[in-house]
Amino acid sequence: MAAIALQAAHRQPQQVSAAELRPLDPDIVSAAIPAFFIGRNAIGLWVAREARGRIGGLFLFKSSAVDFARRQSAPARCALVFPVETFELDIDNRGNPLIVLAARLLGRSHAAL
Image (cartoon, rainbow, N blue to C red; front, top):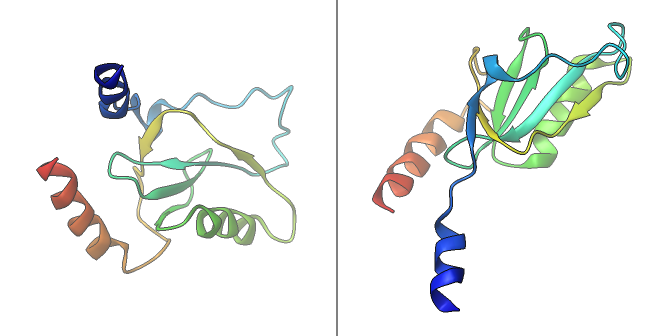
């Protein structure tokens, strides 16, 4: 039993690039409604990326990523999509400016595992 639990703990979620995230179905979300993908990257930081790739950012907290998406779509509301897979921010970081330092520290500790 312990071996099964250990194997499950070491499984890595599937990773996709932000460019590979599928476009949203127009029957589900209108072109007039901004949509943001909110999820984690490979080192565990939160990523918020507008579905068309116009803006995005990295954050330490999920709530910060959601707030960013809502601020960027104001005064209108936005659709939030939470992919199961991890994904990387493939555009300039417009989120937390100090995240570069956190990413370096997390990247080093993640590599040591």
